[in-house]
Length: 152
Image 1 (cartoon, rainbow, N blue to C red):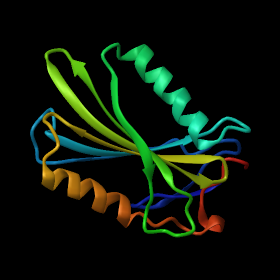
Image 2: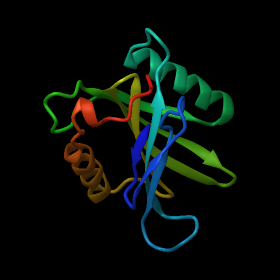
Image 3: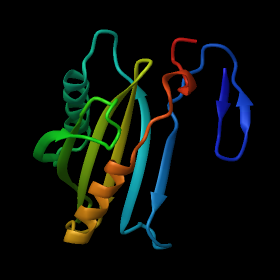
């Protein structure tokens, strides 16, 4: 399978699928005060988005005992051809810090799920809330023929 990277293109051996993660961090501090992560996953055969999200939440709560969901709602991008996704707002404790997080999952075709994560060391400000909304609204997918298929 030919796979386009930002820097170049590589040819993967047969049977590989895209499970890459892109992480963007604000500033140079460690840990970053705010990060945006895009994760690629696949859903189980016959699994709809709601079932996928439920399964992922179960995994998170089993690994992060303090993981608490504050809100769950439908969320849309500016791409009219993409079905609405599901947004989760949550927090968890990491040692002595509260980590605030928003995640939005979208089925993008070919059995793939794209998950946006917005993670902060502090409560989300009004500006950060607008930035999250703008980020999700800015998402446009490539055509179905250019998506990396997990069927290969």
